[in-house]
Length: 123
Length: 133
Image (cartoon, rainbow over all chains, first blue to last red; front, side, top):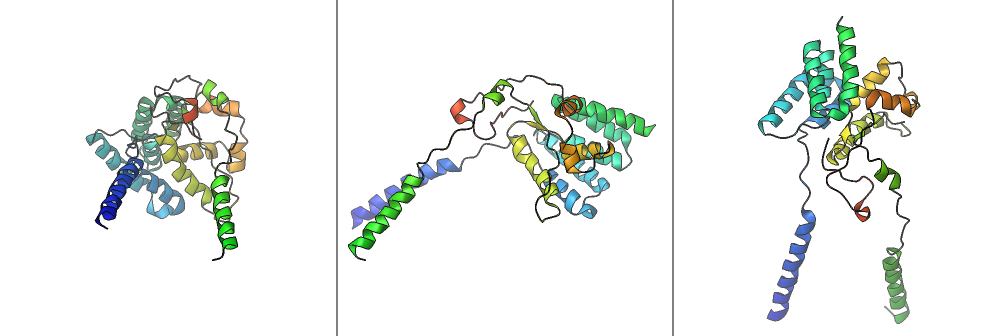
């Protein structure tokens, strides 16, 4: 009787060891913060995610990520820039679009167009 | 349980096991491997469901897994407003824009060799680049 319980414990222990290997997930590349729920709210409940509020929340998220030396996710700067533009801050918008361009060179073509439209829109 | 029922039960179990052995034809990734993309543009999807907000829910959630695989994903809200400003209000219209035009607007073609190479057998539906550009 004692032998079977010890064997059972061994099998259980080995099983747990094997299964714990399945639980490891790769570290996320970026810190996402509130970005995704914010976008969701923006579409589904626009009243709760006005441009002004998005500007404050996204700026806070960026500051936090920078302090923690985490990489900002693609599109966060661009989203903040767009919200700043809607909130009536074209200078901040231009700053953010440039930041997105610098962080992610893949976006440079699109960001150049956005910056150009910002300039014509401001004038 | 008589022996006939037992045999039937065993047969059922065996059939369940063997069903897992069915092999499906692997996806052909040669086009992808010849021109590996670095950025993904997600256009607003056509809504064929009964939920009115479905395209937006999809847009807001699809970015995270795509970006975590290492691709640059264009900001969906900015892209959508850009399209609307250019007179394309419907997802169907947005998806009808010719690819050459989309290419010109969003990204010049650029080669990128992923540093973390994956063997052909490791490639799943969305290969992990894990090195964002």
